[in-house]
Image (cartoon, rainbow, N blue to C red; front, top):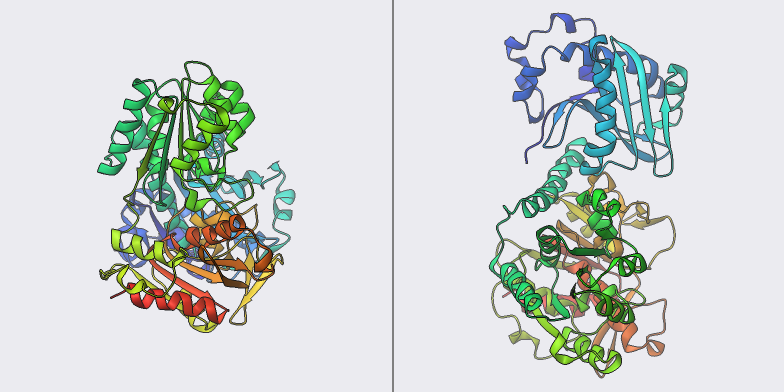
Length: 545
């Protein structure tokens, strides 16, 4: 899954103007250039001068006129599992980051340029998750030929050079760390690789995942109508859903988490009517031969489950009541859901099976237990014996009330780190932490959890669910804790806790569970409420022994 390419900043590229035709790859100086893997640049040596000359034209006509920093970075000959690109970078226009792919061809390859543009838009960019905001630039023999500018709502083909220059009228010198962003491509490709290996039957399953699949398949063969499979975050429910989807021709898949599945490049299945975002369309498509599979089924209306059961051969429900947080989400456990379907919808008990996937692949069992205890409503008295084992060197967790300490850890963290907060929390466009301004990610930033150019953004629970990061930084802003007869619950301090139902309190606490379970390597919590800080700090200190 390696990505390859040489990284040049604009000042270094400028030093090559006028001497590029004499540049000698055999001198070995190219080995001193930073990059991901420099070996392919030697086979790119014939095209290298043309790329530099193209960048010189762009520099004179676009970049320098708009004061683009000399430190701005470009990757020359960017290569990954899905495409080879002559030169890529990121440019910020109107405060929006754009992925930019610059392709340089000679006259003999004009048809190839058209083919590349089509392939980029239909295949490569969706797989790399750059399908919303991008600019494709094509040059022939050193002259501008064509550009495609794509935003979420508009696609524009540009053939006139003056119109092309106008695209950059609001170009800013805001820099994006290209190493971080393109390293994220590896993570995206790994997700794609898992999907592809599942599809080609090459995927190696954890024993718990294989056990769940075997159980589901056996229950379908034995005529079970509804199969309820619940499990904690990271235990492999989505792998099970995809495995069933690719193994059987009569599977229909309902997607209730668009953010995750948009990374999987399943467009062909949406088009051929086997994969759906809409519940009603999904139910309408079912027949007596269909096996309906629903991932994140805690988001599903109970009546819709009964509708599916009345039409399909079998319904496989994969979910987690501990991740039910939105209006309409179900807090029922697998056994409670089974009993509800029996009593309210007259479904025979013999037609329903339940199973719990217990083991998570995200981290070890000790870490999993600690995170369960952190978000659950158990009292702190007598807690010391609940988590006896040491968490281990591979995972760290802490809580602080110091915004400066929190941000210092975030900025100094190694690996892929994200800041999250609860939803809804701050409705403003920006929030401030330790005096620094952070933009609040919105619905348009669906890929927040897998792209590093959102490092100055704060995401929420909708961005976090179903995604992993290395280090999860959680801001509990305006979050309090209240005690009921059922135990302790987190709540939004904008609400009166005495007026909140248990359902509301459980769902808000489930948000905390989702945010606490994103990090593979660490969890760092910022609390602005002393009681929340004390509650969590007590559990952390007693849990890590």
